[in-house]
Each structure stands twice: as C-alpha cells, then as structure tokens.
Amino acid sequence: MTAGNAHPGSTDEVGVRYEQDGPVATVTLCRPDVLNAQTPEMWTELGSISRKLPGDVRVVIVRAEGRAFSAGLDLSVARGDGDSSLSRLAQLSASECADRIAGFQTAFTWLRSPSIVTIAAVQGHAIGAGFQLALNCDMRILADDARFSMAEVTLGLVPDLGGTKRLTELVGPSRALEICVTGRRIAADEADRMGLATAVVPRAGLDGAVAELAAAVLAADRGAVGEIKALLAGASLRSYAEQDRAEREAQTRRLSELLGSGE
Image (spheres, rainbow, N blue to C red):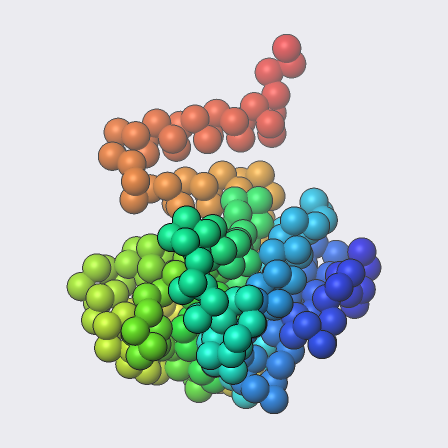
C-alpha cells in the first residue's frame, strides 16, 4: 500500500480508518461527533487490520480525530438490544460469553506484537476502552489535555480488553487497583509522574512528537528493535538468570544475522 491508501473496509462509517506511508501505518478512530466512542463493529475492523497488516510495516500509530481520543464503549450499543449488547452477552452461556469477549480482545492485543512498535497519540479523554487501547500500545504520547480513566467499575464491570496487566506493570498493583476501583480521571501530568506516559507535549505538538518518535524507531535496526521489545516484554516473567539467558540468546541471533558465520 502507498501513502494515504485506506485498508479495505476501513471507512469513516465504520469509525476506523487505516492509512500507510511506507513502514508507518496509522489507525485513526474517526467518530469525533461521539468522542470516538467504540462499537463492536470498530473492534471487528481493528482485528481485520491486524490480520492483513503488510509485512513491511514497522510502526503503527493509533490516533483519533476531534477533541478526545475515545470516550470508551458506546453506551447506546451497550444498553441496546443488539447481539453485542450487555444484555445479550449476559444471556449467553459462560463459555460463549467468554469466547465473544476473546474476540473483542483481539482488536486490542495485536498492538503488543513483537514485530511492530505501536504508539498511541492521546488527546482529551481516553476512558475505559479508550484507556485500554492506549495501554495496549508500546508507548503513549499524551497531549497536555489528556485524561485517562478506567471507568468500567461505574457500570459494575471490569476492564476486559487487555489493559489490566500493562496497567499493573506500569504503576504497580496497589496504584492499579486504586485506578480501576475508583474510575477517577488521571490528568496528563499525573499520568506522566506515575509512568503511564512516554511523554507529555502541548496539544499543538502532539502529531509532531509522535512523528519524531516514529522516525527514531525507524532509524534503529529492525531486528534489534524486535529482539529488544521481546526481551523487555518478557522480563517481568523471568528470573534474573532467565533474563540473562534470554539476553545472550538474543545477542547470538543478532550477531549471526549481522555478521554470519559463513557456514
């Protein structure tokens, strides 16, 4: 695909737009009239993008039109009578409900793939599903007007779109619990202090800061970036000895690829 080309099925009507400029893909939430509130149709499209992402893409930027990143789940859908409404989900068997939610999760979790680096560009509110979408990205550049909130608890629900582990890794279990059970708003400066933000920039400089970060990622060796992301992603699950082993194995692969043994 070339610059500006849209992914098949990625339309403003769905609420998700895909564009690619060389090795950089941009996924844009485009329902600004409802603060980019998310629907199952949008999640289907996000999942479709992940399955058809060209192999030459190295960086994926997730952004949103308008004054907010995402107000979270579209409550008109959640409280309606469609197949993905909360009432319909509650009528399913436990296994069927879990399977349906697993499908929703794939729209978010592909952003953690070791083959790409993902950057969320967040302005205004990122609530519930919006917060979790940003959390699934590797890095989060926040405008100074950004506000995070894990608001699922206000509906009597839990965060279920892949955000709880990353949140806990970033801020620790005690702070993560406080954020999730209160559903409070977290301003950009506080998000920065607690490690939720990679950087906070003036609203007018958000796009430029994200482009600069993407360029820095692209300037690095692709193989090294993939190995580094995998090393860091698994570090919390490994002992020191296991991490040391993972490092030397990764370095061995890099040396072999870069220099080769000639065998």
